[in-house]
Image 1 (cartoon, rainbow, N blue to C red):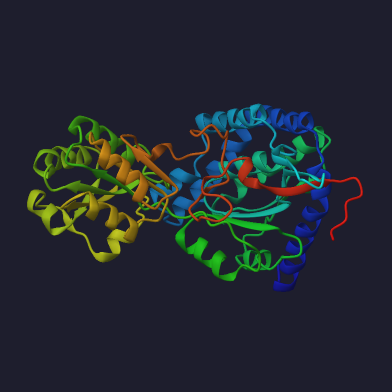
Image 2: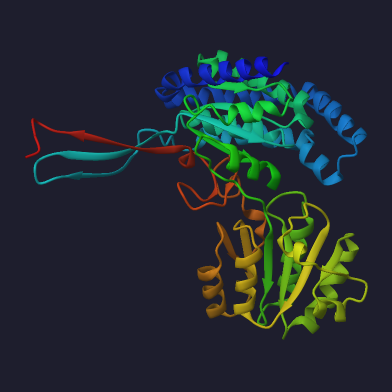
Length: 421
C-alpha cells in the first residue's frame, strides 16, 4: 500500500469500530458469553489451521535470525491453544461489569446520584510477538462492551489473520456487530502512526510490547495512553530469608519462562547472607544455562561472572541472563529497585515481618510479593480470566488489566424537578 492508501485504510477500520461501539455497549451478558463460548469451541476445532499458520510465521522468524526468546513468545502449540480456549470460558464465567453500581447516594435536596460502570468505547491495542494476545484482548473487550482495533506484530501476521477470522465468525454466529473487532492487516509500520492520530474514533490506546514500541506510542499518540511497561523485575533476598525457599523462588522466577515480562532480571542479596546463598544460587542458575552478571562484590564469589554495567541495572533481558548485586541492607535494596525498576513486579524473600512490611510499603511497583515468585503477575493467575496487559502507570488502572480496567464511570442522576439556586 502507498502512504495515502494506508491512511485511508486505517481510518476506515477505526471509523467502523467507533460506529459499532453503541451496539456493543448495549449487549446483554448472555449474548456476550455466547460469543465467548463459540470462540472457545472454534479455537479447539481449528487447532491444525492455527498451528500451520504459526509454523509459517516461526520459520520466517528463524530465517530472519530472531532470538529464541522472542520465538518462544510467538509459539502456539496444543497446550497454548487449549489455554486460549479455556481463557475464553473463564472470561464468560466472570461477572459482567457493565451497568454495575459503584456507589449511590441520596442528597438532601432529593437527588439520587448513582455511579455506574460503562465501557471505555473503542480501544486501540498495539502489540508484538504474542498471538494469544489477540484472543485475550478480544474476549475482554467484548465482555466489557468495547470495540477494539488490533494492530499485531508483523512477525505473527499469518497466525493473527487466522485468529481474527475465527473471531469474526464467532461474532457473526453470536449475532454481534462484526465491526466491533477490527484488525489492521498491513505490516507497514506507518499504520501505527496513522492509528495514533485517530483521536475522533479511538478512546484509548494500549501498547503492549518492547520498550521501544511503548516509548514510540507514548511520545506520538494524540490519544490517551494506558502504558504497559517492560518488566525489569527484582528479587531481594533478605538476611533472614529461608535459603531453600529463596533458591526455589529465584530459579522459578528467572528460568520457568525467561522471555516474559514477569520473570526476574535482577537478584539483590543482603551482604549478611551472601556467603550462604550466592554459590548455590549461581550453581543452580548455571545448571539451567543462565549467564551471570554482577557487581564487584558478586565477582568475589563468582569468578567467571561478567561485571554488570550501569546499563545492565536498567535492562530487561528477556533471556537466560541475570544480574546480581550484593546490598548492605533493606534500605539499599528498596532504593536500588525504585531507581532501576520498571514498576512492574518486585519480590522479597524474608522471615522478618517488619522487613516484609517495609518492602511492600516502600517499593514503587504495580505488584509486590512477599515469599512468592513474580511469575504470578498475570491476569489469569489473578482470576481475571485474561489480561490486556500489565499497566505500570498510576492513572486509571495499575497492574494486570482485566474487565474492570476496560471500563470507566458514568454518573446517573434521578430527580423530581429540582433546580439549582
